[in-house]
Figure 1 (tube, helix red, strand yellow):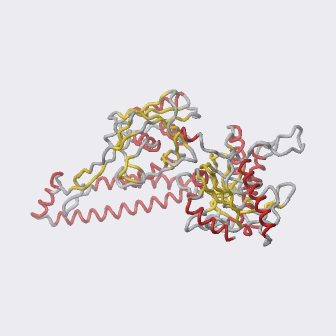
Figure 2 (cartoon, one colour):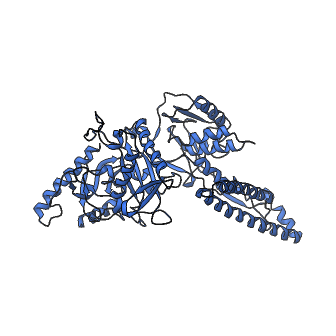
Figure 3 (cartoon, helix red, strand yellow):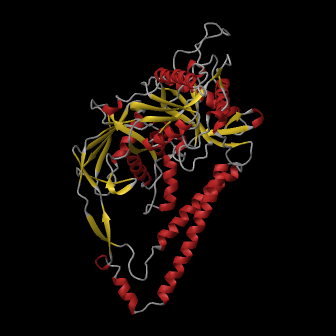
Length: 577
């Protein structure tokens, strides 16, 4: 367990929301604390490499639990502050600009040295191109500023004296500023990582770094931070795919992103800091949300290339089953022997080579992640999610990690190569949560909702003959049977019984009709399954991922949470199908 305690020494907190600068942020976001830690570390004359290692360990921790009180928004007060630039002649700090040029030049030299050692390093080549553009922009700016400064000096006159007077704060024009503030009921905030297992050295280094942080958010928000042992206080907010509150958290690679961003903004406004969002909800409410057996802690693989040429090879959604079957086969072929039950979906055999029956517990699902459900959606698959059950153990996760690492080692491209037969190869890499599109974010598929609509068709456990028959009596009988099958499928994954609407047409933008997908056949027996698109409405919000039916472990029956308006529109489409 790891805990961090933050005390607001002035019993107030001044910081703006990431998406609305007129409103205060509460509680303080974990990513804001991490940015303060990085700034404190980098502010040293010689930043400590050991502290950097601890920061890299810390950034990879999952979203923490938060212990926090309520807070009262202070009435917004508008302040009028002097403009930083005044007068017709703008005084520029050329020394600061040349410092930026020096920093950018040194960074470029380092990257070029790395590229010289490994000319095939694509990441280094991309970074070098970016740094060259940045350096060229800074040099042009320096040249222009120098020219303007020389012209201003040559044209000095009595009017420039008046302009110089305007540089005094009391003579400058005033700019309206608002500093949102909250007054917490309790000035202490805690973050907790119940499953973290830091070493004594890591705790010591982290505590020393936290002790040097003087503020969080605005400079008036003075704080005292430290590492704390486990406490009896219950969390107030917890990470949850069902949550409605967005909170900025850390992720692996965030320190590198902050350093790259600093090369651009150099600590000056305006700036947009890299961020990863997590959903939070009240701890008490969290226990009341129904959740499926498959969990929301995903490993997401992004399509990064393929045999079709440069750039990622994005398959249409109708090829989802081809991709998920190939990914699952690759994982099993690189897994330990005997195959772990959580990956294979079969019970371990008593004797080597002895056939086994299907597992009675939930196991690994390979799920396609397409870009659907928005105005500009194209229905193409951006990646796949490897979804383990909610009760997966560390041993289960380790089994998956081992298989992925072996797969990468044996791939020629350095990525995870997926062989699709005559269709060629698709290359996958772990998705970066800092840059991954919404389609590859688990929150997109797992947030709580009362209404859900299928993105891939649901394979029914029982054949529904006559479901689309013109014979009314036959159709109604088959529809009742299929509806009952869908409702039972919800029960199989731990969800309550919903109202069900069946359809041929895709109920979500850019989703093909049932006829656009290949028939799902049960593995082993190869029995064809009837498939339908569905729209579900539960009496209370349920959490995702909602994966239903016989093909759920291969991505069939994947549903997307939808808004009320979208659900209503899709019902009309379904009814007309």
